[in-house]
Length: 220
Length: 290
Ligand SMILES: Nc1ncnc2c1ncn2[C@@H]1O[C@H](COP(=O)(O)OP(=O)(O)OP(=O)(O)O)[C@@H](O)[C@H]1O
Ligand SMILES: [Mg+2]
Image (cartoon, rainbow over all chains, first blue to last red; front, side, top):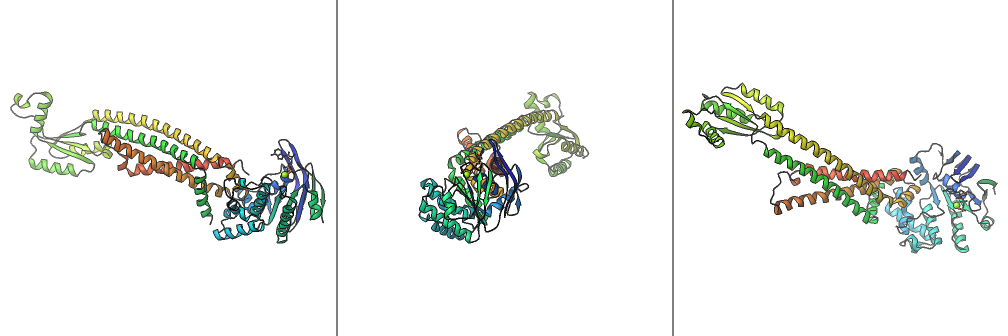
């Protein structure tokens, strides 16, 4: 489903990822674990085709990063839900419209949009925030909005970049449980985190990153 | 349907960027106002030059011994000839009176018989006033019985034609430069408008919108913008025409209101100018978004 083959990524500031080789299969739950700056977001961006390797290839859902067309990038993204580390919410739209956006891009009908948006908002405890604007929400609430938007169209893969970074222990536990539920319903999950206790509480395959290299890939 | 997405996003886009939108509408208005007024000014001055030109194109002189019957027949033939705008008959007496008026001398006092021939004065329709067409006409007329000579006011004709050509050339170049700069100014303004929407473009692209889907609402927005701007400019031109009529008491020979094709042209120009301008700006921005 996702395959990295001899992947190198270089920023202007220097090499950020070196020699990545791994596969993530359908129905897997994988933690990307590492300190700040170790390269977690960069890996997710490459899976999302927001960034392309300087060497090697990234294969996602049958699409090859070395020769993918812009059109197909859009198609791939419609099958992937991404919780961005910096949320990427539209500041001039209410929460409802933000969550609805992926559905609308895919041309869903109005009542389908309404039922899906409200049910996800319910499940994530942000129903009462639907008519608010992003700047009126706490960071934790915005994070849950970002998650709701990522899963609203039932993607094949969920990429979550530090999805509980701004949550207190109780809310974090709720969100993690929720992501596991999505996984159990048949979505592959790649979960970037620097939170060690999380790995102990909800263990899963863990890829440990240090300075842009995978130093450990521990299967359960 | 995605169509509903495109329409809704187009309208949301207009509401969200109301100020830049209005500014862009006015920039299109001003651009087309200049273009429209330019076209009208050229057409009107050409019309004035046209009026200044001799009030007829050529004169068919009839033989002295032509009978009334022959003259009537000739008149019928000339009248039916395609492309004739106007035909006036000048009798021998009319010619004498004209001679008198022009030279202050009575031609009848010099000679006991009136030597001046009767004639037809012909004016062609504008779109038949080409040299080829008129020369053919002269050849045909010369073959008819009763025609003595056809005199073409060629010199004057050529001179006026020359002036018109010059006015046309200068006006075309000027208009072209004006259009170029308005296109440039409008495009720049639209770029600024789109720049403010970077967040939206980046986000929907990240959420899986194809380039087409990103561009479509902007294209629609540009079309609406151009339509409003162009309509406003047409409205202002019509108002200006009325203003000139009532306050300057000058009834322009060429008015936009009598030329739906010019109105249509301006609106089409406005719509394509701004929708393509917007499209270009978005395309440029998409290059920065994976
Ligand atoms: N746009 C960029 N330009 C230059 N260097 C970058 C850019 N983005 C990331 N980097 C560098 O690449 C390396 C990996 O960054 P990345 O964002 O993938 O780390 P991360 O593991 O997600 O960190 P964090 O936990 O802080 O989010 C870092 O050294 C970072 O400085
Ligand atoms: Mg990161």
